[in-house]
Length: 275
Image (cartoon, rainbow, N blue to C red; front, side):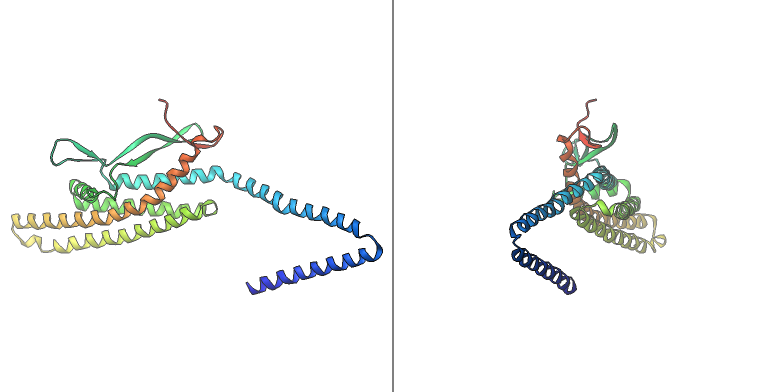
């Protein structure tokens, strides 16, 4: 930093010195007005080149990456929504009635790439901020059988993390700082969750090591308690993952919805289906 500042000061000093010399010579030979005109023209040309042409080139460079950036946003949003689909139930039964509580739905809004419908957006109706959210995940884990659910969740987390890392590797140049920070936090939450799920699975296995020595009824009771504990722990861990996914999901959806009112010649747009 100091070397850069010294270099800048030296360059400015040399330019000022040359300007003073030119002014002195022009004044001596009586051509000061002509020098003022030439300096004005040169200054205008420099300003035009630096502040106008540079902005135009920067704008053109940004436009080159618009389609790639939109495609990247869609892939990231699809990655997050696919993870939510695998971790959450679409609906859970209500305790008081025979009805159901819908946890998420696939909306009618679709993401297009050219003429191809590439993806339908997922909308959470019950989110991590709701008091019943964790109990819904707990119910889903028990419904699928907690060891199976924990294994499926761990696989889904690993796949989402791999996709995010691949996107970092291939699209870092076009990623905005905001979404980069959000995804880094989200990936860290996934890594932590995978470790906790592994620990919960190992704890269940340790609890059941002596189950074979028990009578049938006691063994079933011990397995049931261990499975319930695994489902409860996993539901808490995955609730934190879903919570950390909400911020990048909202940001990505906002980026896609902003394209609704743009030119129909855009490569990627979000629109309502007509059929």
